[in-house]
Length: 306
Image (cartoon, rainbow, N blue to C red; front, top):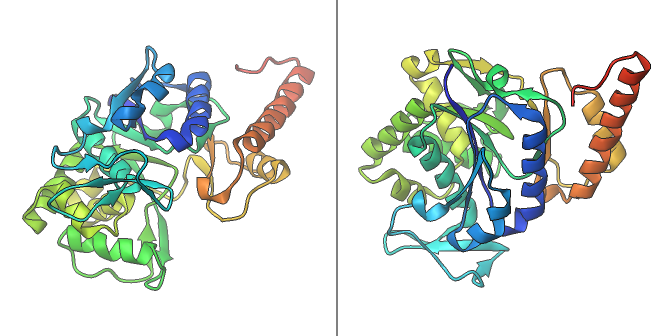
């Protein structure tokens, strides 16, 4: 069995979301070594209460090059913190979280990583070895869903191909973005080696200069472009997380319906933070669904598993 870790870059605005994620991991998730939280150096104290026997809170400076430095916390643009250097234009905290995922998966001691954003919460028992383990790493994808005129995904796909030295993509292209994504450490290292060979620069600098990037599209396009790494993965169109990506906020009833319709293999839920769905609403829906399940089991003379 490969050693598996959970990896979550986060920041102060997502403190409440991160608290719910950590609580749900502690309640429901098994078969992993460590849950890593990566945060800005001056936010380590804020997140230290989540540290424990299987969770570590790490400084993002341990994963970024020394030439990339944070601007003061009070310097925000569009609600984001920024990092600067003399090599490239400033990059946002959204970029540095992507760098932290890549660097964490490259340099931490486990062989496989399950990447979780702060807005994920588990609602069922999850044996991570069953979800993301096995001889081949699962690679989630949705085939032929990215159009060339998509304002973000189209640019990210084109830039991924350029960074990896691939020919221009054919659209509609496959999407590899999700809320609960698995990466193989050796593949991540090979991907960054490819970026450096193509760009002639350190991989972090190449990504800073590219700017229009998605870490998941980089990894997915790298894997499927190389027969060796593709053999090390198993393509799947089933994501273990029930995902909501739209802009309008969900109500508790909406979420309850989504959770009741979830397949047996779906163990977590995420409403993208930009949807405005409150954590209280999500927790209310989860508690109702779990309460209903508990009541059903008791009526059958069975005890809930947790």
